[in-house]
Image 1 (cartoon, helix red, strand yellow):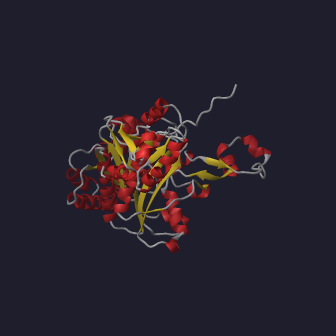
Image 2 (image 1 turned 90 degrees about the horizontal axis):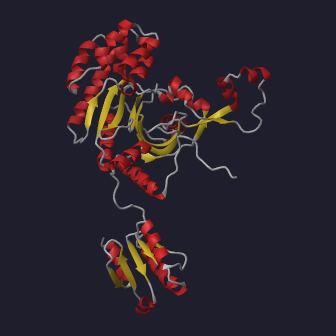
Length: 455
């Protein structure tokens, strides 16, 4: 018996109907990117592991999908190394490449490699899949699409403001109510200094970034497991639980972080971003959230995260400022800031809220029933003219029973059906049936095409 086929956990097939919905998301995001002057690039699905490793922190490195070398990958490996069963060491010898974990690190590599062809500031976007060897669960996949926009080669906080505007515009167009959360890694560094644990900034940010997922008690337990003192953990509590308006939070923080130059710089940056946004028509709430940490190590300034308000799901967009990501590839002191829309989670949110347009944007509009060879040959020039006019049109390939052809049209939710018999051919016309009302009218090919152009 043949083995039943399957796909790896954490991956999905998408039907034509689902692809139409996904393309609606991609097209909406792409249109907003274009309105703001971003240009598209693409990078390979696989990168050298030397490009990827060490950029996402210890936890991120564990989630990299590694690609086994082709050829005799045992060459040069001793029996002792094989018997040691040291997975990390053996993987380093077996694998020189890996699937990309995100689009930002490959983008930094791209900028360094193409620096002589780029005009700065460089505004690029990318819509491509990424892969993470994560444990699959609701809203979390091993293969998923990211839609990234980055501005590199400029320190201006107007870039952060523009990215918030992009987030707001995309979700307004999609009809999703969101909270846009803002924090700053400099504030987090200032907090680490203030509680007396400046060397534990990474452990602190990784832990508090999980507050929504695992709760305060478990965050505190994780902090203690990393060697952070109970006194420091106690000092941290009122800071990460600050409430009130953005102004109230920043005012309180100024008192707490007064002795930290880094922390005060982060407060100043957040104030500037929020003040500028107040003068702009941003429809969704922008909230200062001190528990927002973003686990990736390369962020150095403002950080963003977007949560859907009407659906229980993880963040659907995130990003932040990185000051020297290109430095690891030999191009120091090039600052950038970017955001990434999680298309797969947005897809799930739109499905749950039933927010897709009722008419499929790329579905067939006009379907010709095939009554036989003569009728099909009569129809073909009309199909060609309709397509030239931009009408999405198809002819059933076989002269099958009428019931079967109409069932096909219904299954694809095609709104109009064209019928051609002896009478129509003699008159040089087509009978057009509106599938929603059942109304039929006999039209010339020119009238048929004109009727669609008026819609």
